[in-house]
Image 1: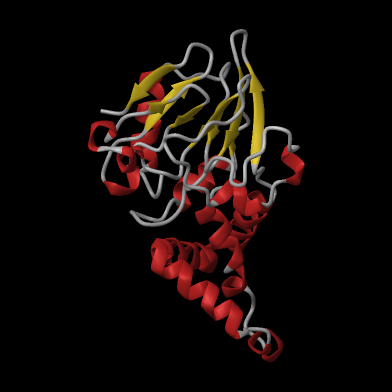
Image 2: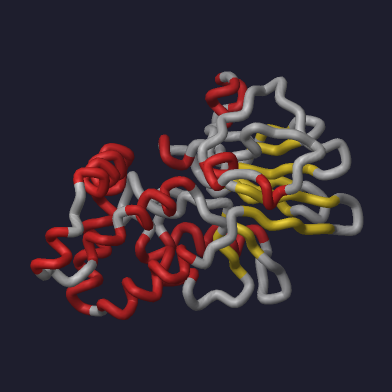
Amino acid sequence: MHGYPLVEFKKFLKKTGFSGDDFLYILGDVVDRNGDGGVEMLCWLLEQPNVQLILGNHEAMLLSCAFVFEEITNESLQNVTSEKLELLNTYMQNGGDVTLKALQKRNRSSPETVSYILDYLRNASLYETVSTEKNDFLLVHAGLGNFDKDKKLSRYAADDFLWTWPELSDKYFDDVITVFGHTPTMSYGKEYTGKILKTRTWIDIDVGVAYGQKPALLRLDDLKEFYAD
């Protein structure tokens, strides 16, 4: 989503027919790069009983820099190590500046909201399993690094879920469809720009919102694709 305007996202959900009887999974990367960095979206997520965020690598980077919201004391300053400064620099270089500015502004008026947001992200899952009448799904931000069909999901490292860039030829489980984002589909070929990419064992739904494309939604019940106007 990468800072996609909340008002436009709500219009998109209305277009898809999403209601209180449905459940929506967002596969990470709500924050950074554009607009207010996704802060308004995060505030909205806090109040949604039928929407769940699966942690993305950009949320993970934000959490690694949560120290910037701590009260400034002699002790906190001493705890700002070179490693933390490197994490902050990396996050800023990956589009985190807009999110940090928006959160710092929010922190001045409502520090409890920022605390709720950070706790919400800390509690976000790395993956979820979902079943419909037709298929079983694994929902994750970036795919499965170091994949082995016999390895339990609990044995994967967090980075395997957060930072993987699958090759088009990669295959995952035969009996479970893995759905992920992170890798813009356009990186697999210009013909996939702005479109969901389906293979036999996995589906990539990152249609390139960070690069100006409109978001997409995949309905798991029948694999119907929806695209924002």
